[in-house]
Image 1 (cartoon, protein in one colour):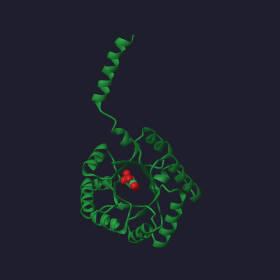
Image 2 (cartoon, protein in one colour):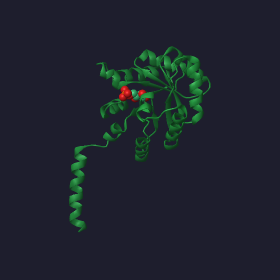
Image 3 (cartoon, helix red, strand yellow):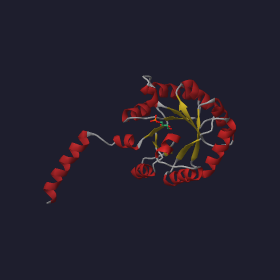
Image 4 (cartoon, helix red, strand yellow):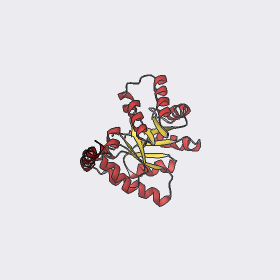
Length: 218
Ligand code: E4P
């Protein structure tokens, strides 16, 4: 399973990269706004800085919602670096654009996916990744993990090459459930990735080992 980090914060991306477990980055307009980047040139420079840190795919989202606008923006974004994946919303013109980009061998991530039907459309259009939002479904009392399971099974039935990128991951159990089901990627905030490190028995065990080691190193 690949680990992507879900942030536009360069320090967090560096930290995850230095941990040695980072396979890519996802961003969205809200995450870009959070780091305070303004203006097209600065936004493009920021995407380039992310690409320079990470060894893997970097999703950059279009903000147009019409076919021509999505194509124009996506082609410009794809020019920034070969690691850029054009993130396109699951809307009618978005699906058409994903097909267009697939024919041009431009990688895409179909975002804002909340049903298996949407995921099926994204795969048929040739999306590189599909992003079902697990946490946002859980937030409205639906089952995000169940959706991941359904999409993985549909893609397996027909041999779709589209990778299932579990998004809106809120806690470590989401990651583990996605791994059990066979999601290709989980994109998570840094805190959720590092929370996998923690276990109280590791802490108490290490404390005891170090205390015992102190008796023979004096
Ligand atoms: C990633 O591609 C999504 O934009 C992101 O995971 C959404 O997460 P959120 O629901 O925590 O905003």
